[in-house]
Image 1 (cartoon, rainbow, N blue to C red):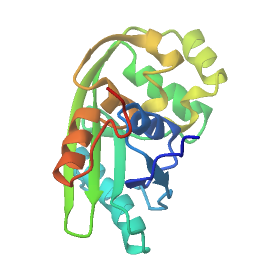
Image 2: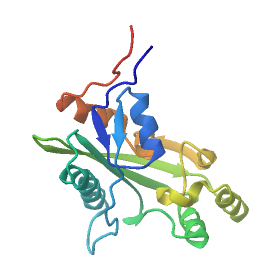
Image 3: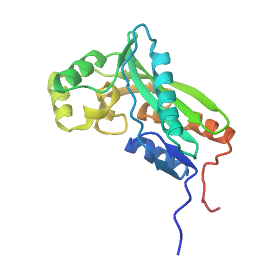
Image 4: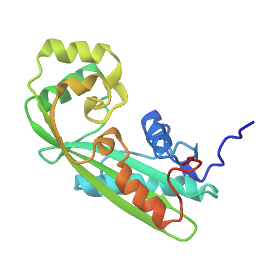
Length: 199
């Protein structure tokens, strides 16, 4: 009888996408969703914003007594230096998708790893190009339910994939956890990927 792998990491996020991505690279983990204020501060740049929120997520769980290394992440869609987070309602989502339609935007994902020895941080930047979207498409997409909890009101790994003409950068970063950068942080902290894999 096989036993479940022993967690070597705590994920400071309730995102099922980030969980799936960690399992994809073989990192057993627990989850403790961080509750932090994700409001943009006055004059804060998009990169400073995602870095701050990722760090606050990781440190809030670490400071609450978590003994495992804690991974925090935050993703923002950026167009014309404006940060687009999760839509507040239908009108907000349709407006976001309208702005992204036919244009190229940036997706920034910051990843912070807090251990007993240090706090390390990295940022992934990807460029995504949307094709032109009709109002009917945007409304139909809203009705799928997918845009409700997604930065920029879309999911690259879901129904929203049909909107994307091109991507330069990290596909997993656009999903919410850039795996190359995350693996590098984990390796530096002595946490292996592919745990429990057999040759």
